Image 1 (cartoon, rainbow, N blue to C red):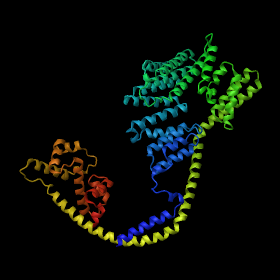
Image 2 (image 1 turned 180 degrees about the horizontal axis):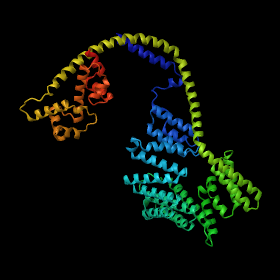
Image 3 (image 1 turned 180 degrees about the vertical axis):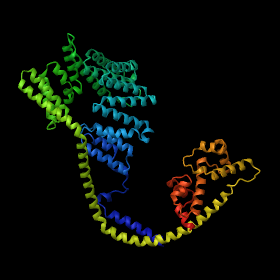
Image 4 (image 1 turned 90 degrees about the horizontal axis):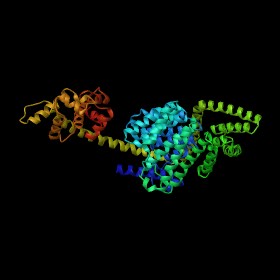
Length: 573
């Protein structure tokens, strides 16, 4: 009768609690799960570009509700910092990722390890720390080859070649990139095609950067040749690789890299000393402007250095005007620095020296500000994140207060009722539990008495049984079980027996127990003895003496005997 009354009371609590909720709560006929929350990896990655502080808050919350592990949450935080150029948080991203490199779970998971190395590579490259970027690119390449991902390793080698050039090792870097291109040449599968295009892209880009225009031109032309082949024979290249675009995405893929190749050719010819180089540069600029990239503001802005080399300032200045309109008041960035440089150069070329001097002065001031901002960005970003968290926490606290106020009166009445019922119920349960524990302890002690028959070797007609008893005796007498980290092979060596022999004996005389399970049985037996005979020893000390962690002792005790070590000891007092 008491139990029925208690169940009725609990049901009443649940019904009244639901009645105190909002209409939205009433509309739901299922409990809220962690997966229902907006705090997910997808939400964070969709937000980080425009609201990095919000993305970090989502990651923190997702970790709290259990949607993200610690490692995954830290990796996502580093990704937000590494891709958020607004705050120049590359240093923060690198520090987080470097901590993850030595994490046991990361070391045990090659996929996560790959993500961490890629993140470190990209962050160091954005920070223009090319030496560190080279280190992580090398680590990434080693990982690819350990996983037998040779094409990915070659793709990464092209990146290594570029980084070598940027740290002054030009011949070695170009040789690295050329080797990658030669290894991938002629392999008509999409995975190799994509890696080859990336390698050619890196060569054309870096050669233009260091003034090797005659080397950039064939690389860009080879890109176009690969893309033409792929466009004409897509089924030949099809290999199901994850990077391969779907049929409806293929034209955009081809258009994107064609645009890159045209831009590289235009830039290379604009710097070349060949007789017809200017005409060819203009020709490729026209082709570039017909691509999707060439029709966007960002795409047109990227080719302004080439237009300046061609002296086409009348085309450059309107592009700058358009970019400035998009920037609005946000002029504290590298794009505006480039605009000031271009405007100064245009003013000089068009015979406006006073205006040019003004642009150069503004350029120098902004350059200094950006350098200072790079150093101060870390503190600024943490402050912004803190403010965003503070605002979100205030919103959540306000919502909690509203819900609490609706339920507080009903809750107080229910609590009083539950306390009375619970006290009666607890008393009844404790009495039943005590009786149950006494009976259980008696059974445990009887079992332990029977097991002690094995501890003293005696004469027996069965050699196997005698060997088993002798083994059991030595494990107990020499306290071999007390070594928490003892391995099966180590136990066999200590006993002077073969591991297979031990397993056969256990299979025959210990109900098929494994070696670890048998050791745990002995540990439990010895723990019972300590709990009975050493009243001053704590449960933790007892666990330590028998070679178990406290948590493992409690778990095994509960699984084996149905009660806790504390309950066992209490029933012996």
